[in-house]
Amino acid sequence: MDLALPRRLSRFARTTFKAVQSLPRLTTVLTELRDAVKQLERLATFAAEELTEVVYQLERVREQLAEIERRMPGAAGSRNGEVTRTGPRRSASPE
Image 1 (cartoon, rainbow, N blue to C red):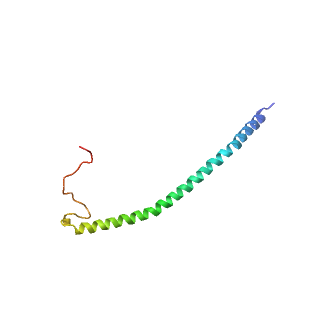
Image 2: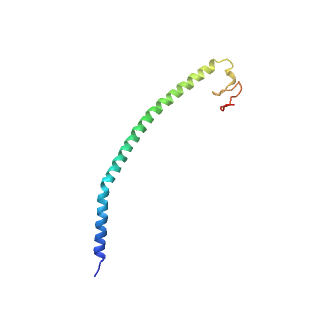
Image 3: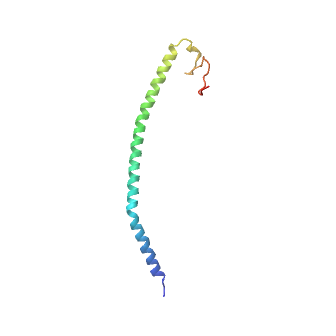
């Protein structure tokens, strides 16, 4: 008597039952994943919009600093926006 067929059917039934039991958890995980992707899309959109504004503001600050540098006496010694230190160097760590 060949017992291979009943074993296969039994294994198939167990596998199918486990798969059906896993469906609610899979649904929950997929929902959480979809929500995470939506959040990432919103974050990316926000970052893209704000990055443009940050670049604009940094360019304005650079222009203002360049104008201040041009008006400062002795600014002829600095080149290409480089700042030359004239005073003693300070350490960031407390003495």
